[in-house]
Amino acid sequence: MCLPLKFIQLFIRINCFCFIILGIVLISQVFVTLSDDVSNDGNGIVFTFSVGIAVIIVGASGLLSSYCPNFCIIFIYSCFIIFIGVLTVYITISLTILKDQLFSDKFDCKTSELPAAQKTKEQILWAETQFCKHDCICYIERIQDWNSDYLENNRIHYTTNKQMSDITSYQKCKKWIKIEGASSSYIAFLEEKYHCSGWCKSHPVYLFSNINNGIPKDACYRYFEQEYEYYVNKSYIDYLIVDFLYLFNLCFAICQCYQTNRYKNSRIYPQILYELASQ
Image 1 (tube, rainbow, N blue to C red):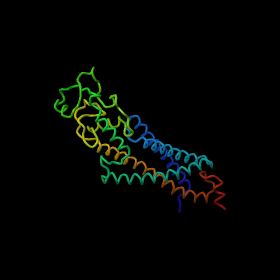
Image 2: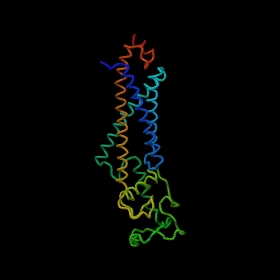
Image 3: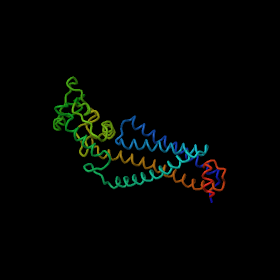
Image 4: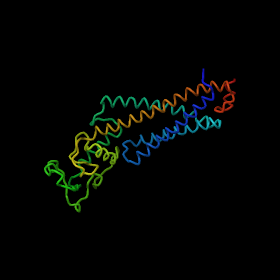
């Protein structure tokens, strides 16, 4: 026994409004990520933005179809709700598998298959061979804060004269090469947040952030994985919400079809569906 038609209409409108809010949240997350310039997954940004737009279209078309019955609007709404439902279920399953892999420590710094991991590794290893070398002498602002033996033992070529060199990060080297993977800004973000440098093994100095920040305490891979795990968990929750909204919408849509077959004065579905239902 289905609920009264007016209640179904009200719930679908509330549900569609939630879709619009969720779509706005997804898109706002993309803009926040871009403004901070700390993204390590360009494809993920594009995909999240696309899903956000699609979710907003679903919500908007659902609201329009409830107030202004029109076959084209309802057709678009129906297509998008099916598409988003199938897509989000698939993404949720994929994220669940990825979460299990992360929790089982399947990935390691040498053979990690995380998105952008290998390219990021190549970029960091290349930076280690170029930064604070003969062709890219780095500038130490306060040499008294350093142990000279530490710098010499690690073959760090530096100067305290800013007129000779003002290079404080790898990006300022003449032989700087941009390799596909995490952006230099994202790697610098990891270095500053976790006081790390290098990939599998800690590098003696910071590479992508300011060398004058001191001595790194650890390698960056596990923090790269940690940030990625946070991103996966956050996305997993977002898509679970979409799944539940879709499930509720589907259940009430079934009730709605049943009720509109009984009450032909409904404003949600066009008259053509009533005629087909009566045949």
